[in-house]
Length: 199
Image 1 (tube, helix red, strand yellow):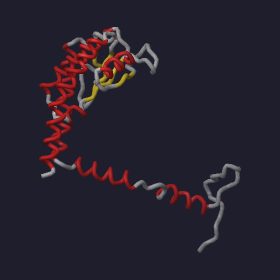
Image 2: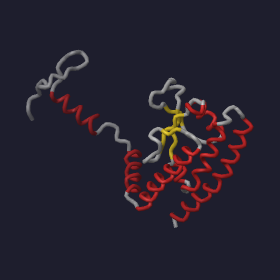
Image 3: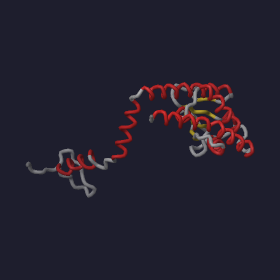
Image 4: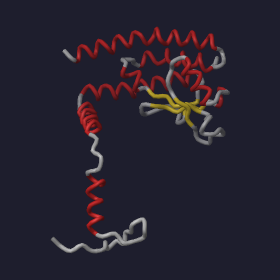
């Protein structure tokens, strides 16, 4: 075993002393490479990577993108301004300034109807990050439940009704009821697919 020596990079301790090379090497091992291996996270990544290699996952991600394009088209038809005009992936950003509603107001109203999305800043936003002028919408969750392109107009209809009546709790409550009725069929379909995949 060799003799320890001050590290040639000049790395110092919080007290200003040059660290010994053995301390630098020890730090590279722990916590550098061995620190806090979380077995449940390693297992979760292994499962996710395994699923990503399947044909089912490929079909799923293709459907996510198709649903996003259909959702974007339906939003455009209703006069919503999508940043970039549409989408090539699983989500889209909507500038709500032409609808006279902030991202925060939109998020809060839609959440009351059990429609989940989030407020988001848009390019050249004139509102704070806590208010925002936009919302971000994605299609991963609804695709996981079995929805296809044909269902996107219905979803946009629910969203539009809430956004155009953001202060009308009666309308929002009715949309919430309609959303639950609509989604119940997809909850059942998802359960059937899960049961069939386990047989």
